[in-house]
Length: 429
Image (cartoon, rainbow, N blue to C red; front, side):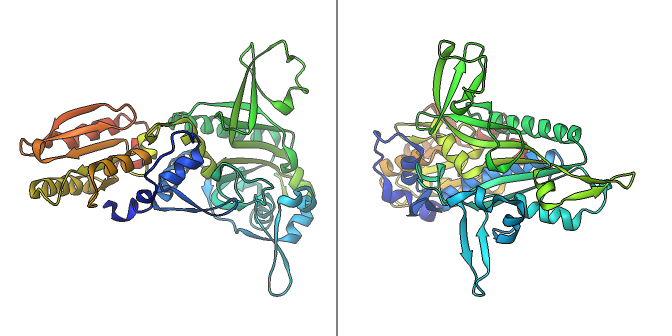
């Protein structure tokens, strides 16, 4: 993973404006995204690596609760949305297209209609229930005001999953499992979040919970009362125990996930049923559970940056775990030789490592590595390497130390093994 290509986009954005303190400016400067149009972004190589890291954690977590991955189509026949009744409910956010035969289609903002179509045509016996299906897919919404880069955009990446049940009790069990799984995911990546009861809106059902990450740039407002209960702004009027005298804190936030007990909304509208043991026709109960992956990446950055750029709260989320910066490599053959030796050793161990082989001055190298947030930095210069030493720096805290060359691999491996994500990225064989 030499840096010639990966830092190509970063090198054009070296000057980091410290007055712009939001995820959008940081992601642009770090070469993670590039704006194509309002609300539409190209995910550049470094940003894509971060997406893949988040996806790995989410897949591990979903598979761990016996959810089954599939992939649903982006393009939906509009008649499905007409059947569910949501084609008008969704309003102008729904992106509609025509094919060459003038047939109407929708670019999916969500997949309740499609998954119910699948269940109707594939699940024929109660013995196959409950079932929990998930996907990681691109979604589309014609946002009236795209803002803060990928936090509110027209095209975005989500993990959405759907569970189907014969009764409310079974739905409640899965709902609770997903709620706890989401907590584990967000605890694992070390973000400061809260859970609030929310409106189901046009998704359906009557019970849902949102996960919010605190950020001063957030578009939502979270209220905290004296009993440490969180409320969304639009829920204050519905909560009898809450009043303005009781309020002690208001925080801005970004929604990163939403789970719903939908119940029988789509079973009723789309006639989704199964015959039970007694051969009685029963409409299915449904749950829906989403995580905004592209939005989550931006939200994490909102909480984790400094004057130099991004630092990742969990090192295995970073695009690279280790960066090697050789000083004047082309003037000192021993620096080049030892840099490539360490680089190849990390590669053989499956550690994501980046070696800066550009003919740039050290200041540029340090700046680029800091802004993308590589957590473990190895600096190799002629003065240290002739004594078989290298310099180590930890990005988040700035801690620096001189370490013997033959100890650096084990030193970093020990640090990674302390990380709760380690077994997700490096499963035991």
